[in-house]
Image 1 (tube, one colour):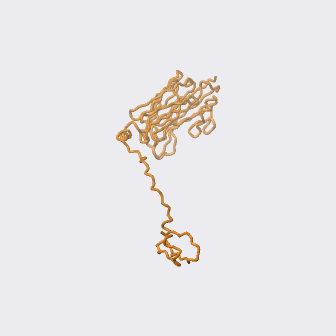
Image 2: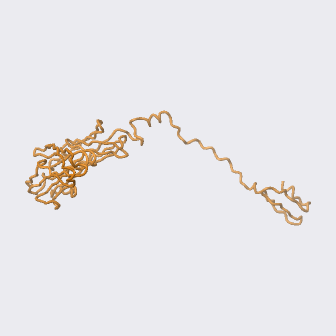
Image 3: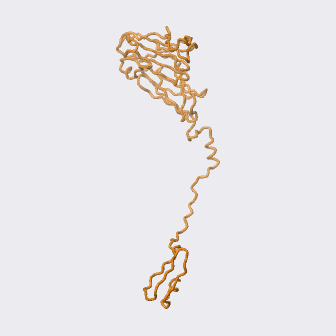
Length: 299
């Protein structure tokens, strides 16, 4: 169309103005150039985008039913709790609980007469160390009547003597072991402020202390000594103390002491103690005859 308008016989020609183009003028004696199309025509013509198939999966009634299944957690895991036990040094057991549908819930770990309470985390997990009180250690996790359990064989369990103090509620009771004549605060004084490690018992050079529980429910402190393979001779003095605090003053508290006996079992002693009045906050009360001293004959 442009070429038919700009004919040679016409000395002067114009192109109608368009919104996107300026007038074009030329003389007849000027060489002819290619016409400039309107700017609007410079936009390339693109084919329409292809129609993509739908990739969003529409849930079926079966999918909805699966998500609503009480046996599946919100994260898609099986709701059935799982308890695994792993052997550790000094005849200790590491208990790991995985219960995806029991998140932020109190769980009671039981091993023989030993009971402690823990809270599962946001994923339904909880773990704790436990002393093996028997060669065949059976551990149970109780969710208010629903129980899962596992067992582990620890042939060296009887080589270690245990003394356990159990209570319920905030930290009240404290175990103290004075090894071979040690005085308060010395290296041989084993307590929560100087608990030592199981490696010390594995070498036969002394004992260690383990605290269990989160301080809100059933808690425990356990002193362990390697009587089966320690060359040491002498006496380990064992003392249980109760702290008089603003939370415990004037109140009656209960505790249970468990202690290894020569036959390989555990003896149990229950005690009820009324702590002094609140004008004696900060005092420490010593519980007499709750546990017996250990006498080491050497190996």
